Length: 460
Image 1: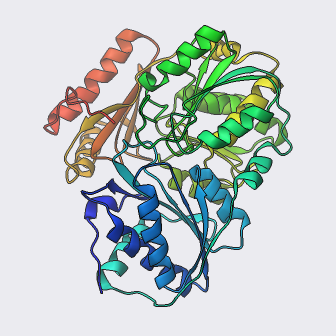
Image 2: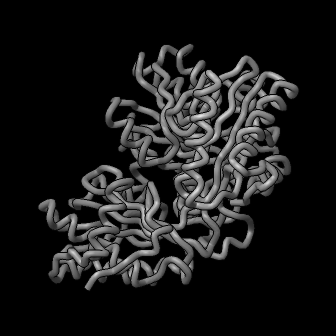
Image 3: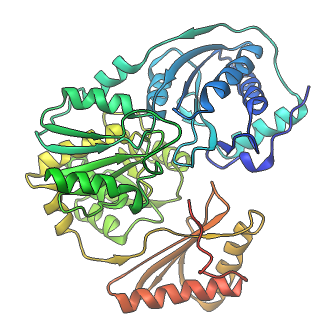
């Protein structure tokens, strides 16, 4: 029996939709049946399955496991926890693939599936193939077994293995996400003093939206750091694969700035290594990597794309503006915000100065946060093509790695299509406000030429 998915849920990096509207248990069952078929035909037999704390995750998990076992695959359920714990399970258990049920940093009514196949990201064409196989009903049949494996103790032990962590006073905001329990357990064994916010896992996200890349979601953490006079604060998204941070003054230390701090000890250990940032990252990051003797590489935004590029280039460390940080140095190459938090503590300790001092030393560029503009799904890539065509015709200095990143004497601006939402994403960086205004005017002109307005800014 064939199954057709709503086409909007088959994204570039994962499968994601709104529960009850574009995504439901039948989808989960079909995903399991098809992914299981792919595993079986590759000679594999076993899949690890984890889930986040969303209200819809248990039911989707049951349906997914039904589909996997109906294809003849055995399933090891790793239970409730952050996405990186499932990635860890896939890396160390005798399995051939893994699926985490998670809506990541999206609002509570979203959910989805992040997949790993043979220690590699399952994304892009793989996801389209999965959709085509389901539509054709091209499935294996069988009766796989189901077992449970608690990964928390092993994951926790592995997180802190071999790390030299200084003693700091730290605030932790788990955002009611799936990393809460691990963060509680870590805080109980780490040196220093730890103050916790919202570690109870609650799919209603009652305190704030679980996305630390939006500054408004860091208000509780900033208040805690100020009230308790802490050294710094750390925040996590809904499935704990994105990290956010604030220093002792409540200033946000953005993803690219964190990467510039994390790069220093890695490059001391591995001189000349390639460190990857995404196209949204500040020029400061690439300059800093070069200054430290590393090879900076700008690559496309998206956790699956970055992980794949790391494997290709042998990069020990990569990161995105969105707070996804990937360590292959002493780790498995996947994005893990809890592990990144620990490596950050170690990097601050190794620097001999505070996070506040490290932030103060950074070049004072003026940049926008991510600006997001609603655009019809069917238009978003076409608009970027139009922009690139106009820029090329005008002789602009354009980097086409992912959308259009345009270098000008004032600085740079970026316009790209989001792979996960029906939005265009823009960013600009300049030396002063007047230059930034000129860059934003260029973005406005391009949007207007394609019939859009920058005023139409989207939410999440």
